[in-house]
Length: 91
Image 1 (spheres, one colour):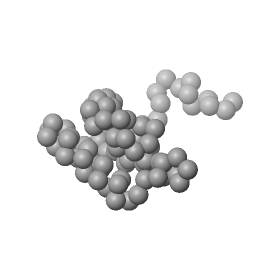
Image 2 (image 1 turned 90 degrees about the vertical axis):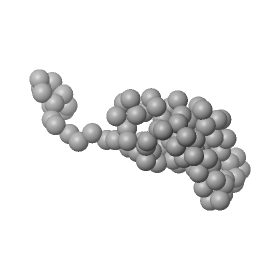
Image 3 (image 1 turned 30 degrees about the vertical axis):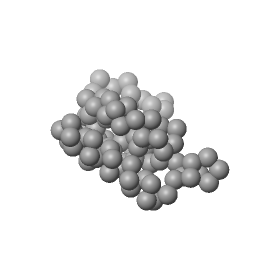
């Protein structure tokens, strides 16, 4: 039977994924958060779940989200500065 391993009393010891690789946490760039405070709240919740790294992936679409590398980098720095001021340590 498929998924038979799910019925075992002990699941295999798999490494824990500690990175979120599809976040929209750069304020105002796309359909994600609007403010750094919203991003902070989500990041703190991710950290409570055991996440230690976030890879931001804002949308870049010429017809909807005209993000540029420079604009993305500026928003990333804004978020990093905010988290640093709040002593929130996450990569």
